[in-house]
Length: 191
Image (cartoon, rainbow, N blue to C red):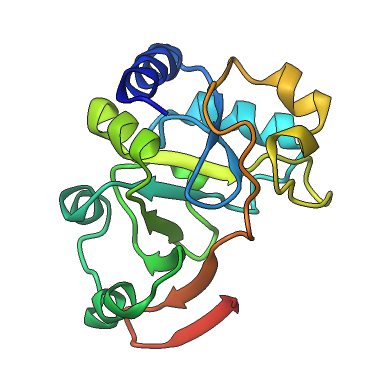
């Protein structure tokens, strides 16, 4: 896959997101539905498309420390230790997010985040200068698709843009999820 393709897809996806749209895109794990994490209306579109209650929060992807500290004032030291030692995609749920839409924050005032290096996602966030919402490309309660061809037509028809990369990739599984409280509690939600 050429850099030109990635850059072209980043440009196309950015134009849609900038105008409040939602995209279907490949992540470092499974295919995701995403939008600007600061756009409450776009986030509502994702909840509606997934037929998901707004109390079930979604995660955001970030492309580095600067974005992480823009959303979380306090990042527990254990978060960095986990990120340093893990060799697979890991989502951390942290306390007291800020600078994101309220309807993406869980009722207990937490937000799941994952730092990604996957070139498309990384470059898109570089362009957006904001976190990217990421939720699996399925109707709530249905199995998570492991490849593009397993994605339900309702999802394909319901997004504003489908990223034209990695349509043949098969994902191993969604990320590990670990909840870290500022009170130093650590809880593995999904191994």
